Image (cartoon, rainbow, N blue to C red):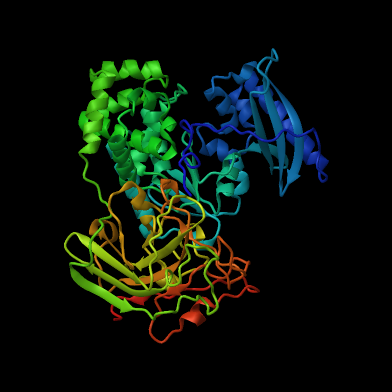
Length: 618
C-alpha cells in the first residue's frame, strides 16, 4: 500500500531534526578514551559556537564536510531554522556508545531557564581524524567506502556495483536538473550528492531520522532514496534557491510540496497521475476549499492533498507565469501571509482563485486506461495457454474461500493489438468469477501481472515486481520497462522505477473491464510505446489480496501461497518466501511451467526466474 504521508517530506527539509527514545547515561564497553575524547570535542565545539567563533568551531569538525557543505552541522542548523537560538540553550549528554569505528553521543537541548522541556534530541557522531575525534554528519559515517560516479550535475553514491548508474540514467538526471532550473529561472550550478540506498531504514539512517523512502537536505544539496532517481527531491533542492538565502525562510507547505509534485511527481506516482486524482476529487467534491489547502493540504488525505496542491501550483505557473509564483513562494509560510500575498501579487480573491483553478483542472485531458469491448485493432501478438494448468509448481491449491471458484486463476489466452493511439490487451480465463468486492483487505478474486520488456536490452529493466510482489524474479536479459497489474478491482500501470502512471479502479467508474471470463482494456501508446519485434512479454496469474477503493492499494497484490490452504492464502507452496505466489504463466516453447515455477531452492535462498516470450513467437 502507498500513502504519501509515509513518503512526503514534511515542510521543506532544509535541515533535519531527530527524535530518538530517551536512554539513561551509559557507556559502551571498548575504548573509553575515544568516548571521552568525543565528549571533550563536543564540549569544546559548542563552547566555540556559543562564543561566536566559527573558525575555532570548524577545528572540531571533519575537514571533508567543512570544505564540502555550506552549513556543515545539520543538527545545529536545525535548531536555528526552528527559530531556537542555540546560544540561549543548554545541552545534556544522556548516553555515549562506540560503534564500528566511530562514537555516538546522545544530546538533549533545553532552554536555559528550564521551560518547555526538551527541545531537540540529537545523535552526535564523531570519528578519528589526525589522531583526534571530530564531529561528522551521519551521511559521512554510514557511507564510508561507498562507490561514486559523476555526471555534469550529480555525484551518484552507491554501495554495490549492482547499483552503478548507467550513462543513460545519469543523462536523464542531468536533463531533469536543467529542465527544473530553466522552468524556475534560478541561478543554480552546484552538484547534487545522490545516495542510492537499499532500504527506507538506510535512507533514514543517513540523516539520523526515522525510515523514509526519500529525503533531501536542501541547504547542502544532498538526496537519499531507495529509488535510483527521485525527481521530487531534486525539485526541492533547486527550488530552495528561490528563497532569500541566509534568512532561514521556509516556504508555505502547499506551495513547496505542490511544486515538487507538479514537476517531479512523488516517490511512486507520476505528475500526470497526481493531476488525474486532483481532477477526480474536484469533480466529486464541491467543498474543496482553497483556504483549507493553504492551511494544511493533508487535511484532504495524503494522496489527494498532494494531488490538489500539485494541480494548484500547476494552475498558478501555467496561467500566471513563473515570476509571480516565485514571489509567492518567497513569502512567509503562515496562512495570513499567503492570503495577503495571493491578493497583492495576483489581484484576485480566494473565491475567484478557487473557481479558475477548478475550471482549469477539470478541463485537463490526461492519459487514462480505456475500457473497451473486445479487440478492434491490428493484432500484434496472440497466444493460447493450456486449460487446467493453474497449479503452480504442480500441486498448488486454491485458498479455502468461497470466492476461490475453480478456474479463476487459469489463464487460457492472451492477446495484444494496437492502433495509432492505444495498445489493447485481452486476457481470457477458464472461469472468471465476477465477485463484487467491498474491501481493501483480504482475498478478493483474480490477480494478473502483464510484464513487458520493451527494448530487449540486457540490464536495461527491472527484475522484480513492485515491492517484490509474487516472490519471483526475471533475468537481466528479460528486465522489464512496464508492468500492468489487473484484478477484479481495476488496472494499474507502472514502470521499471516503480512509478505509477495510470490507475483505473472499477469502484469509481461506471465501466467494467471484466466481461464474462475476459478482461479487456487499452493503454495509451504515449505511456507504454508501440508493440514490435523488440517486445517480450509474460503474464502471471494468481489470487488477489486487497485493492478496492483506496488508491494507495492500487489493484491489490498476489495472494500468498504457503504450505497449507487457508481462508486468505493458497496452499502447496512453502512458508519460506521462496516459492512463487503464481498459479499460471505463459510458457515459452520448449519449456515446462511446472519446472519453471518449481525451480526455487530454499537452501540456496534462490527464487524462480520467469522467462519472457518474444512477440515474434506465435
